[in-house]
Length: 142
Image (cartoon, rainbow, N blue to C red; front, side, top):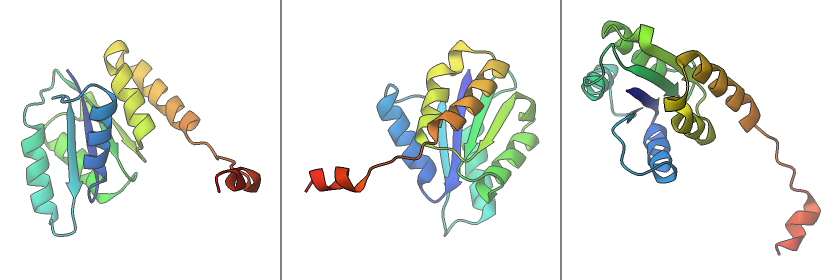
């Protein structure tokens, strides 16, 4: 199975998980979210993440998305995957957002890891757009 693992500071990962399930089919066992909250020490975060990942084996594949590249939740999650012997089965991305994760979720079972990696990186480039709502447009809504 290919898993999507979402990690973040605060509740961002849980919000992504909720929106993703709403847009892509409801309850799914292949989506795992874990947020590092202000009252949670790193030991608790790591322990809870290990519990959530305990069903993943070396036969599975993992798409790990962190809110910030190099942030504590993502680096601790990468360390957990390494300790579990799962780094070879993981693609790891920082700077996640809903369109990026949704695209990955929709395509993950139809592509090889290499194809999926290229698709995710290209999707990330395409999804960031500067929206130009001019002053005239704002007046129309008043």
